Amino acid sequence: MSNNNFLPPLHPQFRYRIEIVGNEKVPVLVIDNFLHEAEALLGYAVKFGEFSDGTDYYPGIQSHVPEFYSQALQTYLPDIICEAFSLTRENINYSQSTYSLILTPPARLALPQSRPHVDTIHKEKLACVHYLCTPEKGGTSLYRHRATGFELLSPERMDIYGEHLAKEAQDTSWHKKYINGSNQYYEEIARYESNFNRLIMYPSDVLHSASIPENFQFRPNPIIGRLTLNSFIYLK
Image (cartoon, rainbow, N blue to C red):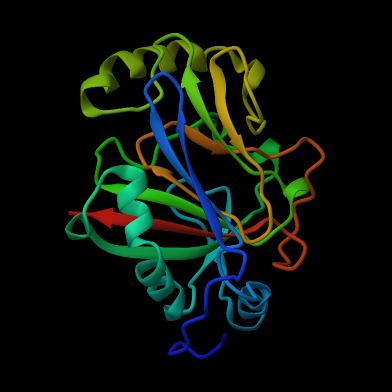
């Protein structure tokens, strides 16, 4: 898989399902057994990865991916994406992907990293996580903000949501830890385990977070760490 011109085939046991989650009926696409011989993506990360500090509050390090990976997303998934998110092919613009490894220990978390977040407050992209690790590394959960009932954020909701965030920030009991399930401020509405070669996709404006267990070992080695391929599908 080191050849950027190579397009890996789909896994022979590729399968998918579409779930509708929460009160706001958020669509989630779950693909199991995405690419054939996905283990080679681990090898690429080890041999060619150039990891550096993550961007946009990502609590770890990130690296570029082989060009063929975006090609695989854009070749194999458009029809399924359209089905799951009520789009047409013309809505899909392009994709952008990075390898990601969570490394930040709880004691070094910034407050925004301790609570669920959205990637955008506009309906401009879809987020997807392709797990290249095993379930004990922690999957991904979607959340509802208890005080407002918000599962999705939008520009119109930010004033009231921001007021609640300011109040909740004064309670330091939940700071400096990864959220992993419901707490006093957020209710977990869906959880997806990090099965190897599973890909999940959801709207980027839904509240979500990696579900990092308390006994998590923060390891920078892609082979034994929580390696994921994180992508955005940009929409027109």
